[in-house]
Length: 73
Image (tube, rainbow, N blue to C red; front, side, top):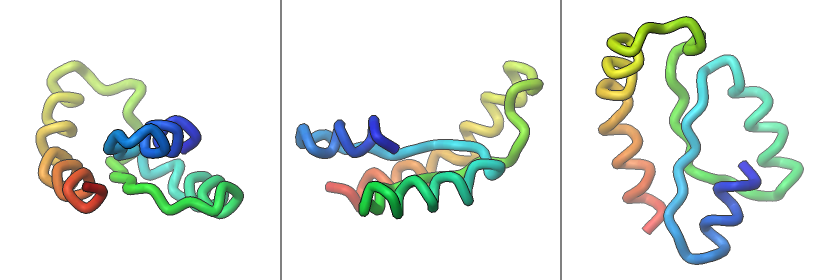
């Protein structure tokens, strides 16, 4: 979240993408930063997925990422 905030402070659009395992951590960190970034959560886990599974996951999340980016501009 710090990186997204830094990007937005520089005038760039930022969207966080994380697995659903990190929803509560993201909420807590955002509260600590007093910041509400655009974040898209994808199904957990991701570390043991194949390249094909990761591509499919990205394809499914793509529209949500574009919407989140559009809401930041």
